[in-house]
Image (cartoon, rainbow, N blue to C red; front, side, top):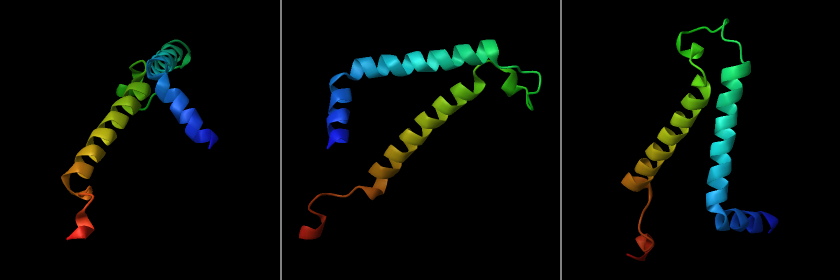
Length: 84
């Protein structure tokens, strides 16, 4: 029951939640650019500041888009599917 109230609390403050997520992402990028040593990187891509943060964000967006497409293309059915 507390989890439902917490989710409703966050939904009512969606702009604040989005801003907080962007602030955390910016903080991760800043910490990665300033404090992570790149001399032991295995590939050239790993030398780019915040590569893994950007990679993870893009991967999450792709997973969400693909799962929505997959769900709408055949998994989701009408509510009256069994009434026939």
